[in-house]
Image (cartoon, rainbow, N blue to C red; front, side, top):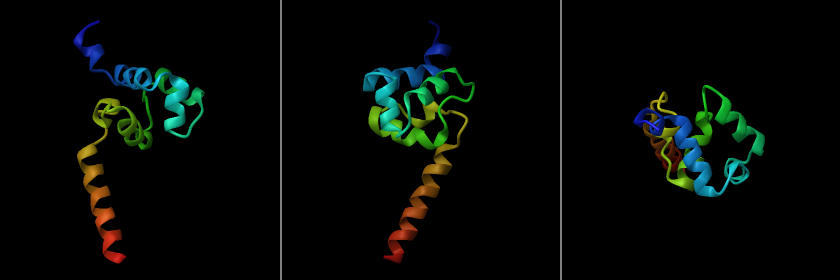
Length: 90
């Protein structure tokens, strides 16, 4: 296995699957069925971005590794701003 494949989103997803004990376990983390995880492995896009934070929290495999095409710095900052805005309303 070369470094490129070790750094690939598919490898990151496989690492997350191993960490939790299988596709069904990862599906439960994401509140989906096992077939979805299987599809993510076969899909060119991989994991839908909205599930990456759940996977990161459960496995430690970062969103950046799962979906390097997403600007996670922007997403995290906008989520932080939204959370702070909601807290200001309370």
